[in-house]
Length: 517
Image (cartoon, rainbow, N blue to C red; front, side, top):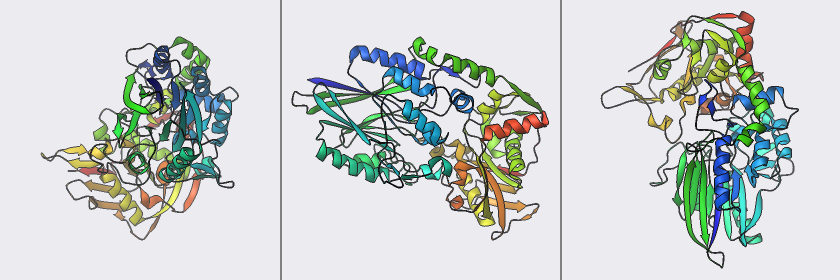
């Protein structure tokens, strides 16, 4: 019997060091710790296959600092993958966040191929990143590895970051390429590495989200013949299992764990047995050699994070996330005010991205900015009708539900299968009340502009981040609306400039909205 080992990382998001950048406390994350696990596994099987499943080059202050100030140096994330001798990487949606120049340079620096069969050049109609799959030989067995990416990227990404690319349906392209590989290559093992997740409950098959096509892992397992292993990601879930004979794995995010699949083959290279597990990094020390590779960039990043920006007069600290999302808060009002200021409009929306968002300390540093606004979003001004605004508020109101005792809770669909706290918006420039006692779709009980009821057929210019402006988070009422102004500056830079220009910013709350239940 032969054993084939496949190790998979996914959604590393620029995490190298075992720390939380918000406070520099130790954390069980990062490629440094992942490297120690990989070294341990290589002692068991020196022919193991190592794949990264995307969302690698964006996500921490280190990667942000590199892109802003050190682009003449090699990409630190690629240097680490090269050091670990990865066999292949798959394009994730966040690979595009810093633009095509940064991505193309990262790919050029890589010692192993980047795969994505369904992202094609608009002109040639061929896979943009070159080979859609690779062939490896291990223990005399022929192994094909196909890479595909969620095709939902145009709904989130800035147009200029994906210019010239077409994103074909991941399910259909996987069908096409699996059939091609089976016919042309006749592999003993066929692995699909998919930067996407599961749209249905793995046991019952019931939908766990709106079936938009963002995640198609369940359909891939059920509808495509000939796949042996499906490596997944994007949803930041911790998953192992087998669906329709296909072994699946998803190893969370930020390098908290690595996925491991072991295939047992007989002498005729037929698969006799499959196992999957998640190897957590909690019990290992970070590999010092890995940390040395990026040490100089990390040192500069830490100095930059501690740079003073200005002062907050009053309280902008966040202590209770649910309280922030049910009544106006100074930190949210501040971000909306910054957006309205640079956009020159009177209505804005923003969200609190996760429940770890700390708010702003009295003495603001870059660390505070990055901790509160960790995505490289830009801003757009859309021209919306009053009806669009009302529908958007109703969409946000779905974030809440009432339990049997009548207490307010977060709707479980915003927590499972993936936390989506960033898909609840809070608005400035309008006055509104959401009553969660009412049925979904009828929760907006007050909606005024400057004290008068909003005109449903009226036109209003609203500033929001590019993710939301593209309809991200099921805000379909924003799709294909007129873009009045595009502000291509990174939101973190906008926040820094706003505070630096004023030196002291006063915390204000105008109580323009509330949630009741």
